[in-house]
Length: 205
Image 1 (cartoon, rainbow, N blue to C red):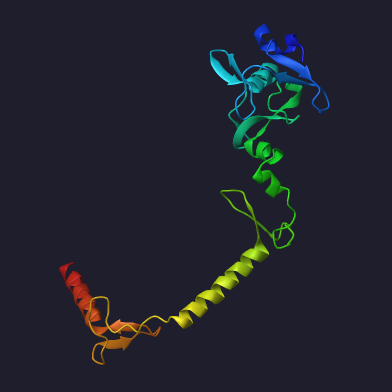
Image 2 (image 1 turned 120 degrees about the vertical axis):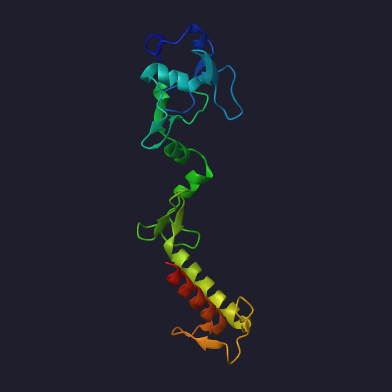
């Protein structure tokens, strides 16, 4: 934590206090302005930045915007957000930072079984391509099967009314109705009209 290594002005150090907060080495607690989320703020090189990011950049150089295809962030290994000890800071992806913290995502990632007790093995785990959330394949399959049974029961209980006319209003009577090879109803009037239009287009070429 030497000033010569970090190369920061005296006013930076005037806003810090060395404290033993349970990590391997003492933290350097930020005593100036701290945001509601716990991170200190410091005016440096013409802009107000996170105090911990200033400390990291002074030690290790400019912080890149991306890391391994994800947003790059500076994480506190000591888990104290107001610490500016560069030895306690690490550049990681945003996802790693979230999983390390006390978040819902981190808690879910730590789970080894789904809510119904099925283990999250590689074969039994589906990872959503957008959210990254994990889903139990056994439960997904059971859900699909349940929905299929329910949909079939719904169709049996509420069958679709018999179609008596085509979409254009022609009646499906004995003279106007025929069935195709798949067994679907075909309106003879509509079929004749389609055939007539086809012949007209053919002759106009």
